[in-house]
Amino acid sequence: MTTTSTHRFNRLLLTGAAGGLGKVLRLRLKGCAEVLRISDISPMSPAISPQEEIVPCDLADKSAVHALVEGVDAIVHFGGVSVERPFEEILGPNICGVFHIYEAARRHGVKRIIFASSNHVIGFYKQDQTIDAHAQRRPDSYYGLSKSYGEDMATFYFDRYGIETVSIRIGSSFPEPQNRRMMSTWLSFDDLTQLVERALYAPNVGHTVVYGASNNLNVWWDNRFAAHLGFEPKDSSEVFRDKVEAQPMPAANDPNMVYQGGAFVAAGPFGGE
Ligand code: NAI
Ligand code: 15L
Image (cartoon, rainbow, N blue to C red; front, side):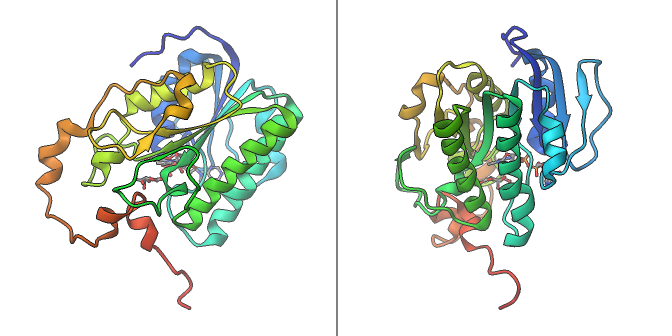
């Protein structure tokens, strides 16, 4: 998908630019801004055009994040720990990091943030339940808790300072669904791109929570509270069904077959106690 947007933003910040989704968005968001400032703690490949600014940064470092955010109009915040880890490893990048991003946004006048939240905010719902954005959160991991905290941060900074956020509870965004669970949670890169663009450009989003899934046959998430974004996923995991169903059938009580969050619900405890 190519963007149809004009250069609405002067300078757009993308965090997590060295990651799986960051690499995709780095290429696909370039039409959204005069300058795309990309950042990560991990090495990033050299600038692909003069339009890119590469700014390495540790999200846990408050002053570095404040310098990173200075001069940007909007933030696509995809950086951080993206899987379940011991709490101490999540704390700096995800919990302190999201605070640093919002506080820097306040200080530097940024008005819109797109937050890469996760289905692991609601991972303890069962796969036979359909939930909307108002369903009580049921985080399935320290990682899911950190994303839940990020969503609360977004609500607070909108209520207190008017900074708007779209929190995208991404399902599973990979080139292809990797297992049966992902037949429901899969979000294609084209649909991810469309959703991030809608989130950047839709007016008056306040703090909107939207589930990020493609137009899959069996989706567990109802996006009616995010209808104002105009997100219309085009892809479907159905084209991968034969390949996925060629995998051995897991046991009926395998978390990947029971819970929306899959294996994350069974991770830990850490530390051997
Ligand atoms: P990823 O792990 O490939 O990328 C995350 C990036 O964040 C990495 O490049 C990493 O170096 C960077 N990072 C980690 N700690 C950092 C720190 N202290 N300071 C600065 N950067 C740091 O993950 P992926 O798949 O690209 O996901 C991107 C975002 O979307 C993450 O926030 C993840 O939680 C979220 N997400 C992704 C899903 C998916 O299916 N890919 C599903 C749900 C949420
Ligand atoms: C996530 O939040 C992770 O970042 C990603 O690596 C996948 O595990 C995804 O959720 C998923 O639930 O499939």
